Amino acid sequence: MNAEPERKFGVVVVGVGRAGSVRIRDLRNPHASSAFLNLIGFVSRRELGNIDEVQQISLENALSSPEVEVAYICSESSSHEDYIRQFLNAGKHVLVEYPMTLSWEAAQDLWKLAEQKGKVLHEEHVELLMEEFAFLKKEVVGKDLLKGSLLFTAGPLEEERFGFPAFSGISRLTWLVSLFGELSLISATLEERKEDQHMKMTVCLETENKRPLTWIEEKGPGLKRNRHLSFHFKSGSLENMPNVGVNKNIFLKDQNIFVQKLLGQFSEKELAAEKKRILHCLWLAEEIQKYCYSKKCTVALRG
Image 1 (tube, rainbow, N blue to C red):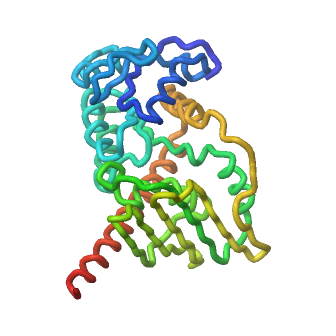
Image 2: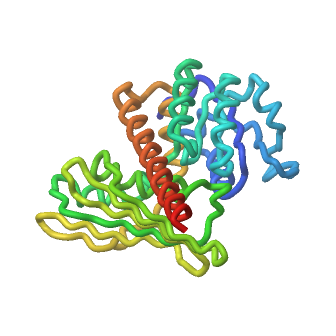
C-alpha cells in the first residue's frame, strides 16, 4: 500500500453519525490508505446539503453512479442488511460498521452475494485494533484459562435501532472469541426495567476446553461506559485493565485493512478465518437472543 495508487476507488458514506463523521474525516485527510480512495459524497435520511464541503447525494444516485465503487455503511444497525444488499447488488464493495446484520442467516446470505458479485464485504471491528486488546492478547497467549468474566456498562441504547444486546454488544463477544477461541452457549438471562431504560444481560459461555466465561452487558441512565474483566489462569490472574495508552486512529487502521482487501493483499486463508470468526459471533449473538426470548415466553406462559 506504500506504492502510488494506479487508480482511486470512489466512496460514498451512508450515515453521518459518530462513525460516519470519523470516516469522512479520515477519507479527507492525507493517509496512506486514503490515497487509494476518492470521497464522492454522503447519503443521509436528513436533508443536510453538505458537510465540510462534502456533498450530500441521494441513495438512488449512489447506487447507480459508476463513479461510486465503494459504500461505507455507518447507519444504525437495523438498516445495515438492506443497505449492504442494495450496494452489493449494484456492484459496489462494502465496508460496514459492526454488527453487519441482526441475523446470522442474513449475514451468510450477504457473504454469498458478495462472493457471487466478486466484491469485498468487510465488517469493521475496531475493538480488535485497540491498545487494550493488544495488551490482553499478549497476556493470555499460552496460558491455561480456568474461568473468566467480562462486564460492560454504558448508557441506554434503543434496541429497535441497534438490535438485541447480544448484537449491539458484539464487540465484547468478539473479544472473548478472539482471545479464547470458539465458544458454546450454556445459558442467558435478560432483566429489563423498560420504564427506567435499564437492562442487564448475563450470558454463560464455555470454551472448547469446558472453561466457563461470563459476559454481562448492563445499560441504563447514569451508568458510565466502562469495562471490567477478570481472567483466572493456572499461572495467575488478570483483574481489570491497566492503563495501556490512548487508542489512536482505530477507524483509520480499519480503513487500511479494507484497502488492503480491495487491493487483493489478504490471503484466502486470512479472509476465511476472519469470516469464520464473524459468523460464529453472529451465530452466538442470535442463539443468546433466542435463549433469552424463550425464557421470557416461558415466564409469560407461567404467569
